[in-house]
Length: 177
Image (cartoon, rainbow, N blue to C red; front, side, top):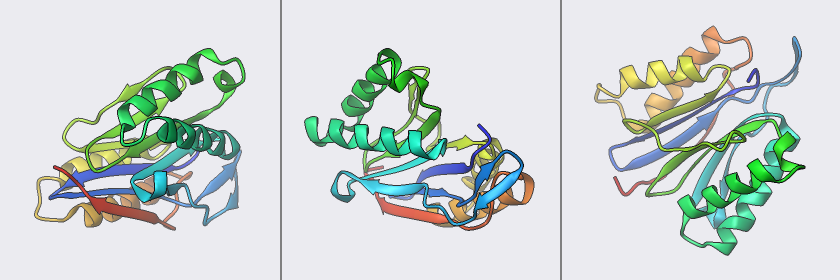
């Protein structure tokens, strides 16, 4: 997806999700400071999206409803959302990916039916996701804290990927691991 970069890192008892603010339409930057990372479920979940903005907002709303239906059960809510996403004719057309996490678990959600947990506490999506992921994995072996790893990795991605900028939104919370 040529849309953004979202990165999740869990390290040292902290969960950090960050993303850039660039919105591109073809080869044009339409906006540079969009907020693609936000808190859900009264602040207990952090989510970030890559892809079509309206589609992602629709998915965030649906996830909020699932989290109300299954409180404190992020995995169950995500599985239920993904089942709807795959089977509902309207939702199936949505073009976005999401990273969502709470204090216990972090997940990647896609319209292909993916509900994936990261290896090593790091996961990324979006056009600059592989750059940020590589940088974060390398930095995980250092003494840097999770927020610093996210910020540095997203800056590296912004320096490489034309669909990613350095206007970052970063959300943090205490983690169970």
